[in-house]
Amino acid sequence: MTLEKKLLQKVPEWRPTPHERAALIVAADDSPWTVRLTADRSEELSAALWEVRLERLSAPLTLGYEQLESWAKALAASATLSEPLSVVEIDKSSGRAQLRSTSPSESEGRATYFEVLLARSGQVDVRRYQAARTDREQIVFVMTHENLARLAASIVETSDKMPSKS
Image (cartoon, rainbow, N blue to C red; front, side):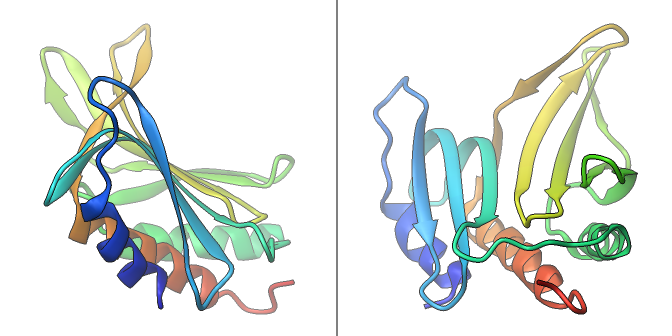
């Protein structure tokens, strides 16, 4: 079963204990990808997420700088979040790429935006932040189960298109 289908099966059934942050790990039957959802709440159609992490635990990648850059650009073009993403930075020394919402939302003088971090090993972290001029804090974001599954599929598909991975 694909990761996308597995998420659509498992997440709607998941009910974390009320008022406690909890984690759910979902692994694909047909690929090395695993998703770890950290959430405050999960309901029939959506979840209030703290973080979405995708990892290739059984077969990590070893992407070079150019491959990481290509993956970041491909993901920015295809990611299914409520705001378009753009590549902010690709750090050659740490082997990480940072993507952020192109046009952050504004609320009460604070910008709210998604941040996606890609690692050359194939780890992907999706978080949402709220920031003012002097500080920023991670916040919970709501996604439908369908959008979550599409996001995971987009991450896997763009990774699978990378040439000459190890």
